[in-house]
Image 1 (cartoon, rainbow, N blue to C red):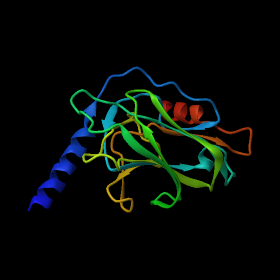
Image 2 (cartoon, rainbow, N blue to C red; image 1 turned 180 degrees about the horizontal axis):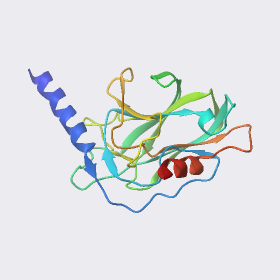
Image 3 (cartoon, one colour; image 1 turned 45 degrees about the horizontal axis):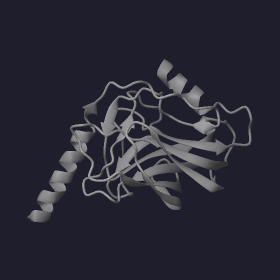
Image 4 (cartoon, one colour; image 1 turned 120 degrees about the vertical axis):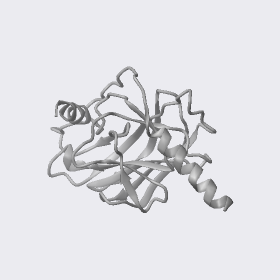
Length: 203
């Protein structure tokens, strides 16, 4: 019975955190070598065991099938009504398609900062295929903190998802996560993360 109650408490906390709306200043768009699906409008605070963005290189450079990831950037938000029990979190890179991540490429512990970018810089760029995932893993928290941010519009198809077990992934219902990657992609005429975000905002 205690185990069932604990699970229900965790799920209710996660659901509540996903419903906190904020009015914050816009987050700047990045240069063209950054890949992002968010449009820069921070609107919702959300928390879950795993939260991730699956990237498809061809959304940014049609025809390309590989990329070298140089950095991952994640924005967190510490809402006053939702105190964190830790600021430590893993930022991970995984291979995988739109259904789920399949093989871990990197795991790095970072300290989340309120409404500021947290970075992982890869000394050796990480080779990724056409599709890959950047994920936050709340392994250090008992209630899935630190909380992250989404914008208020969803890319089509959806690229921001959450999971309790790394196996079953559910799409975000409010918007896209502020998880971005800097990547070297062969074609210098890349669409670019900033352009993608602008296009999403326009539609």
